Image 1: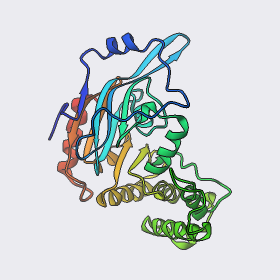
Image 2: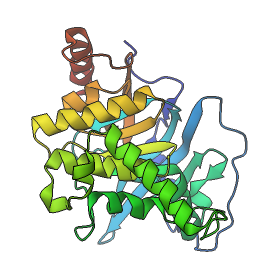
Image 3: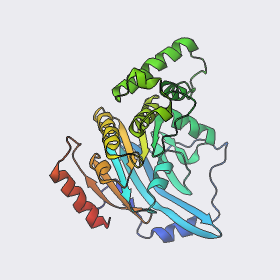
Image 4: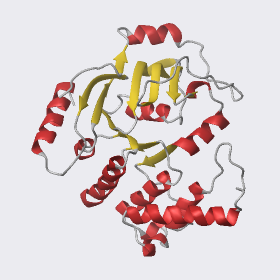
Length: 307
């Protein structure tokens, strides 16, 4: 078992002082900001990296430092789990890593791009091309059936891609529909399910449809925020099995969760406390349910972290 911090996780010795000294008067990058590449390439096997990342919210003149001076590396192919008590900064970190929210200060490197310096439009294209999202609430469009919900994301234009591909939109739509069908089938949704509307599906079926939608553009990272939080135990197992199968095929996944069963599926557990990562646990890739040794190691780690 690997406890505490390693080379991939580092927090400044005086986070609060560091943030307070730099946060006053800062502004996010303007809409037309020029993209700035990293000073040096990311290390081999690292898909995402933060450097001195800080996020501060201001309300009524009071500042709340939610992420404090965080250095973090995410390895390609890992199933990374972010845990911690409510208010520790888990979801805020997830949204910053995915480009859905901007840090107050600090840098986020995704490949050769510095997300902190990208314009809003560039960030939107980056997310569309590289990121998939699964939330506790599925956010399926009620007026579309399952297949069309997935196709809607798949047919959006990508970065540097013409709105109507050279092969013609009809052929492109057919290719995308075939990919959507394959994804839905791999997630255990039948052709009969594809024609259903969201209100005709169970919670587990809705979430698996949402996973297919998140995967339609072949994202480099799949981000998930409490993906089983609104599901019963049976539906949760179906969704977790889908995540495990995807990760087994090399899909990088970052998941925020309070759930022990979800955490057991990961191979890297990061524990957050007061805006910093205070510990890490490395596990072997998940193989089977009911592994008492795996569960014992995780519970011991979480106990040491004060969970």
